[in-house]
Length: 284
Ligand code: HXC
Ligand code: NAP
Image (cartoon, rainbow, N blue to C red; front, side, top):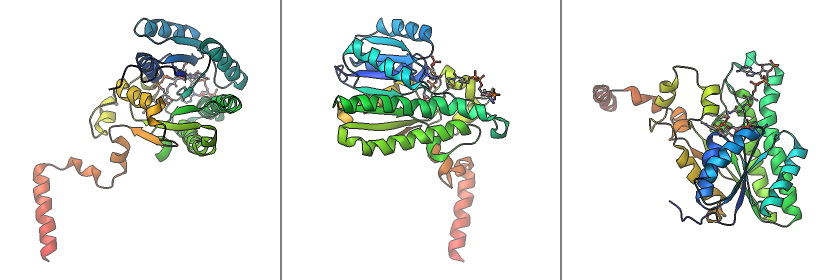
């Protein structure tokens, strides 16, 4: 889909890049010749991922331990990345935490746990990287991974929905405020993409089929589809896209929104009956 040097000379810092979608995006960026930092809490997991991805492709990957909830740790990890690669050009806020639960069953601590990673974590990295880029007069780009329910809201994942909509608002706010510094940003809102992290915490056993049935394309997302969208959005080719939230969900959320989409359940015979009914109504 892209020329192999699309991301040459770009250093991309991915929070939570050791697993799941972060790992898939790291792999794609490396194939497109980027230099990649993957940063999260579990250094062992990161090192294993770095070893695996380094052996597959040309770009260089650096694993760094980081808890995004700690602002000072973000600042020192950014310094470590710069001292290794010379600069960081792109921040990808991908780290997250989530679980499904009836909201009334949650303690206030459960809310904190999720919003500390998702909202405060993204705010911490964005602020630390932004201050650095503004001070050094470097143009830069941020990509945030949100969810489709950041816009619609969703029951049973309420702490995540609140936190992700905060990240979406952060994206739209700073895309405007920081454009004058040459810092632009966008978000991707993915529908379901199977990962160990999300599936184990979010999909009640036996409900996968029901989940997929709601998607007009009748399938979940392929990691490469998301990774290619991310590669485009961090590349120079998409510079004029700023403050956008791009949905990649096979039409899932719109299916829930369109008032008559439930008519999928009608058979061919039902439709013939319906046509008769409508034509008769027109005559009377
Ligand atoms: C109710 C729960 C709970 C559950 C934890 N808590 N799990 N409440 N139901 N299933 C509550 C606890 O009761 C506790 O409050 C508080 O949360 C913190 O508990 P911890 O023991 O610290 O939580 P723990 O389970 O150890 O860690 C939670 C976590 C962890 C930090 C979020 O799961 C994590 O590291 N996750 C990172 C990876 C991840 O979540 N990936 C999925 C991303 S997918 P009290 O007061 O009782 O002590 C995504 C979008 C998916 O974001 C969209 C799909 C379409
Ligand atoms: P995942 O594999 O569980 O990824 C989450 C990552 O966040 C982990 O690598 C984890 O690494 C990191 N993380 C958690 N807490 C952290 C902290 N305090 N500091 C630094 N890193 C932390 O799940 P995923 O499905 O790939 O999710 C990736 C992103 O996609 C998330 O933003 C998620 O909300 C979004 N998303 C996923 C889907 C989907 O269907 N999979 C749908 C919509 C949106 P450590 O444990 O090492 O810290």
